[in-house]
Length: 586
Image (cartoon, rainbow, N blue to C red):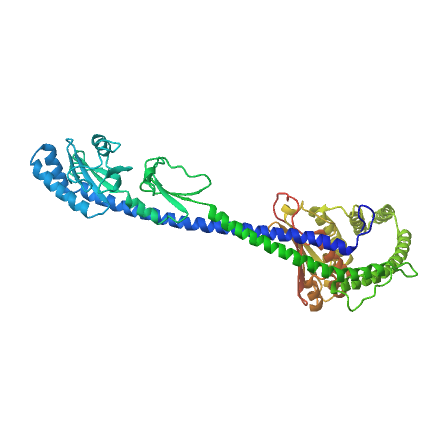
């Protein structure tokens, strides 16, 4: 090989350069794939862990909230609450009813550490409260700061029979501690008088309940928020953010999962810097490993190319030598050659041997071809001359009233004309049937009607196109070799039927049958074996059929000694068959 300046480049230099480029590309691709796989695995593992934690937190939130819904349900369906509320609304024994209601509220409140206040808004506007966040437990600690008044809360909660949840807002400061509360409300229900309004129960729950849920998700490099359906924060570590809209910091990752009961979202905001740092460290390791692999590959390539190019130089030098006849000389094979180079030398020498044989064979074939061409020209007879002679003999037979001879001659001329004209042009099965009848007629005439003939055709396949004389060898074989002199009469039956998108042709006779040796050869389908044991006629028939049908043909032969032979040929239908009914001719 030459460089752009015309200077030859050694093969070793070329190999080192190309293998170096190839190795560099492969190592780069491997490193890139490893880096990509690590990044995907790291991110997938992080996301899966976060997803598990988020689902766990969401499940805990649902369970805890369901506990308070169940507690609220027990309160607003309590029959005593219904009676007390009705008495207070109607002013009947109101003081006693208020006292009993507060004792009941205190029992409920003290049974749960996160409930800080329970408020009952009566239908007449009176508010009954039990509150832990005031010095006087009968006063409400948060209603004066809440965004809704008691009247508005009553209007909303009493309008239907569902739970109403109001997101977290600042409640009060008590005992040097700030309390943030969210509220769950439901109207008091008397199942005997569903439409009657009694009042609304409001449970105020400490936001620290939500904080406990967030601890299941929070990590060192993450912050957790709970927001309502509008995106407003209802719980987080920084209480000053409660009530504001959630906005993640730039560059941070956000995982979000909605709670199906509340419609609130659990949001985990995590810092991507640790993820990026782990990824960079791994990338540096991969790049370092790639560089080491590159140097190792260059060293190995340099060593291998030296031995390889020496053997190639020997091969090239040997190829440039020729003998006196101009044929390249054989290559010397050395014991220290690389096995691959030795194979090349061996194959090259074999090719030279084949070349000498081919030149000799070409010379012989050229001579044989010349002789065959001379024989063909000497034997060529004009088909029209044969037809004219046969026509003349036919008229002589007619003049002498030899009508059987006349019919035989006319039939012979017809089948010769069919066989010779356009011999390579496909015909229909209908044409083949007509020709076969004439051919069998001549055989019957020759054998003095020693056998009877029956042909059965399916009109559906008569327009299927096939090559000429496709079954003639099988019919001829049945007549010539199957019918001997042991019987007075024989039977030859041919059927051509449609069979599941294929043509099935059967040639059956009751002749002397086929010997097991020949039958085995026919069953093998091996053309050479058929030629050796059954003769060139049947072997050519098998070969023609196989080539015409492009290997999609099937030929089966069944025979019993002195019991006859049945040959079945199947091949695909290549054209749409014509409609019609089954027919049988004799």
